[in-house]
Length: 245
Image (cartoon, rainbow, N blue to C red; front, side, top):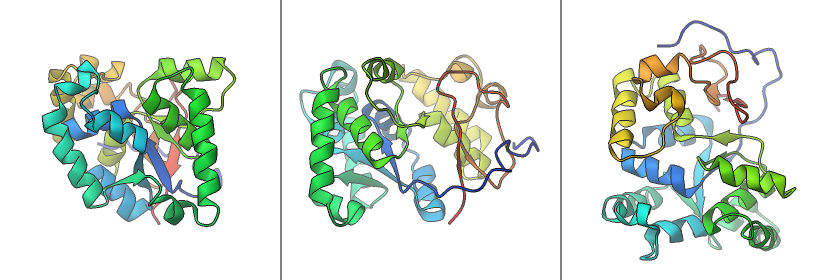
């Protein structure tokens, strides 16, 4: 439950919500395995934030050349991905959708992303390269668990977007907004643990309510009572506050 603390940044002027939230392959797999899309729909409906993937990530999910860790999930997650793309819960950023997202100059932006991603791909994997390039050029957050890739890009002097979110930032946000109950969040935690998926340290060997007390939520509703740890605990603990539109 929300713990009654106001958010520490409530005194700051409200910033516009980002229009997009780019989802990298590792987080997308967790969202599809969890099969809980209410948080994504809530972000789109109430906050006007659209979760989006790049073509390179879709390719990593769908192709028979997916890595070993993905191949065991393909029969489960591919139909869920198709449904989420079909009903607009997820947006695929490609040549057809770029004009509606960018407007005039869409081709130039797409070209810029391609050039940047090609450079990033010398450092990180294909899907990560395009996801990070897109997030950096659009200036929007990215959801990714591969902090090694982020550090590698930063060491190389490449631009990385300011906000790096995890799947459990989305689940915690949804709990704060009363979209997911404590039990539903813990069911997701247990399901991902059974699949051997990465979990934040706070939830690795703790239930959701126990772990929440020491989890610094990087995504919160600015107008609701705060949840989680007060103090940042990790290098990328930078909070993004959203307001309902």
